[in-house]
Image (cartoon, rainbow, N blue to C red; front, top):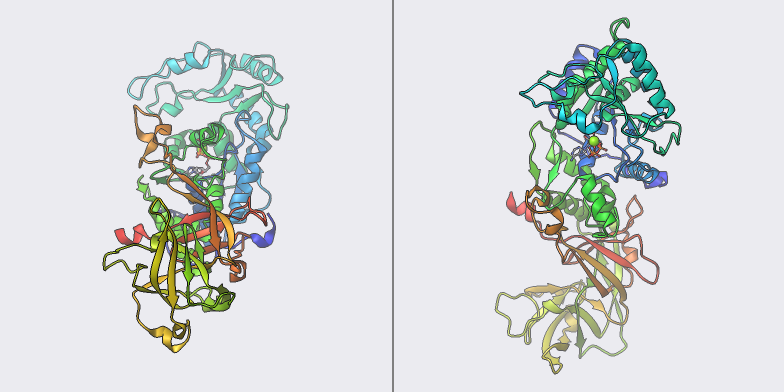
Length: 574
Ligand code: ATP
Ligand code: MG
């Protein structure tokens, strides 16, 4: 992605949270020499989702707020699940959201040598040992929070034997799973994470960066805190489930820095509640399953909660940052209503997206007293919310399309649209009166006949006449045919992955994608100025909702994705 496509966050963030208070207190004590360095540490094993966006906005937001910096670090300790495709997509998504990381991206794999040395150091201190047991055996000895675990028979190996075995592990003398390196802490600790956790495992696997150099890989828990330490991260912000890991991270850091002259600057971990959103799933494993088993077209399917999916759906970076701001940061888990996310994009697009005319489900209207062959170019304002967006012209002619459901025969009085004998305004054109209709043998309306009042041309005095309904329309002869994809929620259940007896896939919405092949849009829609800074064109189709041009569009075949409808269920709730 090129630089000029990056929209920088410029809206004022007024909200601060409990993390700001913690950092303020640290700064007051002049910890870290008054510096703040945060990081966003994804594992490159999938595309980022809206939950990651919360973490990105938080971490980069803190960096910015304190005039500090934010590192991007790929926690790439599991070669089996990781891929450069994910690395690339993560960088693209962070940039698209409008954030710049400090210097070059970092990789935990850059620290593999250092981590190995630290592991050797722990062995030498008698604080780590090689265990020959299988993962199952080790797990069966864990005990429970109220019941102490069982010590491994290999726990008291000599330092020499441990050093020798660990080196042979590194050299590739053993098969996957044959041995592990464990920290020697306390098998009776009330914190299960301190019961001799694994530090290294054997994996004969190709790593996306280190290739075949290693066949032992550090566990996330042994790598993560040290990664922060190496980079000089001052505040390690992470989700609540890592609170119970914190004593272990501190134990590792204390052991490897023991004896160093004080003070040793160690990262301070602060936990916050992750984002949960209803009507979707956010586990990377489940998202990967949706992609691999073709329930969606890819990670960037517009129904996915991924950042790339939201982008393709038409979400703007500003709307996602706004959402992150609205939900705030707290210590307690809750579930956010997806209608808040929709509200945020609607508000942003209302300000920024030009209005154009498109008819998705057409019925033909003939204006019988309008001269055949005549065309008038009507002026239409691009965005009533923003005069600087100017206006464009659109052609009016004798034959137009309107939405099929904007006509109703024998309509009730409150139906402010078209029926025989009633007048409606065609926006930016004339007031017309429906005179008659034609139906086919199935009773389906094939044509509506209207007359227009030439004195009511838009902008002229006669146009001020009061009529109840205003409709959008397109001139048949001039309109462009486009494809429109409408989306509904991917899941029909509020919490598809919370059912004990049912798989999340059972709640997939069979009608989440609705493709309409022939929709009609005004010819000059491209003149309305819809190109956003990220290169995506976004529009409001009058009276219908917000739509964006899909990346698979060609000049002959333009595809629009519906972002959201116009009705705001969030504002109504408040
Ligand atoms: P996993 O570890 O299962 O692969 P993950 O969602 O934790 O998945 P990471 O790549 O480790 O993925 O996440 C990177 C960062 O994003 C972490 O700091 C994590 O805490 C944060 N994060 C992940 N999911 C959410 C969420 N739903 N809300 C807020 N932050 C999140
Ligand atoms: Mg994680």
